[in-house]
Image (cartoon, rainbow over all chains, first blue to last red; front, side, top):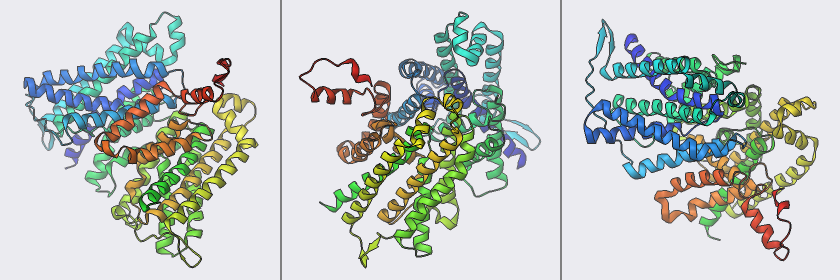
Length: 285
Length: 302
């Protein structure tokens, strides 16, 4: 029982990490609270599902979902955020909220209000060590999220673009005086973040075996709480906070059976941590 | 006027109060709050519980609603306002989710069923009619606007202006930044609590869902739609967006989509709001007023 909850908690935490990393990267460079990121996550799930219905191949549909999300993320950045950067921080935030509302409605109008099943054969097998069991979709989630984390780490520490991105996160203006193409960095940043969000959408689609228009509502706000919990802009902090929240949720609700909504756990954890560490778990002062 | 239009007008009037109260926090002091509906809800629940459980009349429970919302605003606001500005947006959002969950999951607050049996206030030995209730709220709005004129000319108003424009500079000039932020947060929360008290007595039945995060976004939209930080902007926004659901009844299906797109387009092309500085709407108005004089174009950006 406990082991099962542990597996569930880690799987959920890994998906949270995939969603939240994009948010924290966007915040790191642009200082924008990108609420519509969850709309891109939902878009990834829908694109993946429709691709799966057409080509009947899970891994290709995952790639389709990620590409769809990446394109959407690029467009949002280009068309909506860039012209607003000189304005007070509330302007892009409101744009993001408006966009997210509109996206959810568009999904409902285009794909219908009901839940669609995403019943894919993945081709992996489940793993069990004694009483510790990972279902096939949990194996998939761990595989994809570990791959994404390794990719992100290699990208940020071993490539010129990654170096430029870290420089921009420290100070975009100074980075540009050293010849960094800040516009390109921001675009790549959004595309990578959106790839991961799209992957998360597809993963949750097959994990819960359903895709629905408002599936992004709760992740939208929970991911923000996770990002703050980890220390806005800190990538290791975000991963740590995602796993913490995933595990805390499954244990509070699943094991201790606390009669409290699981979606409030992230916010309670965030408020408690901020009281003692105002910069989050791994944030810099 | 029909009972139906009176009901809509009361809703709009309550939204004016809410938009104005959020404007104190977000517009005047420049602190982004995404959880204003929490304080609206705290006010509504205080009034509702005091009325139904203790039998306190409207005239006592509504001021107490404002007081309790202000008090809780102070308790929650002080730690929140010490953290970085972007954190405040998310912390207030978190507070909203937690407050809604508390109303929903703790049986003391009526759970999912909410609180029923709250009545319209009584006066002169009888129950107020809805029309009279509307006038009471309008009276409160006029009173609050009169206060607003005074406050914005006082040192509190000046301190808020300086914090909004440049927090670091304000601090360097000796303005106690945290203190004035907290004052704005308490005043805004208390006013939202007052609106909550009116709302409870008007609706006669309150549920946790009325005070969710979506409601906070609606209030924030009204403020930015009209023009954040301006005196009349929140009022204009509350009237337009408050009436929008009624006007757009024929296109019911696309209403929320329209709402999101409207917000997005407004911020993208007119970030200062309908009547904010340099807005197209104001420029057209000015143009119409002084139509004969073609000069004075560049003075419009003030």
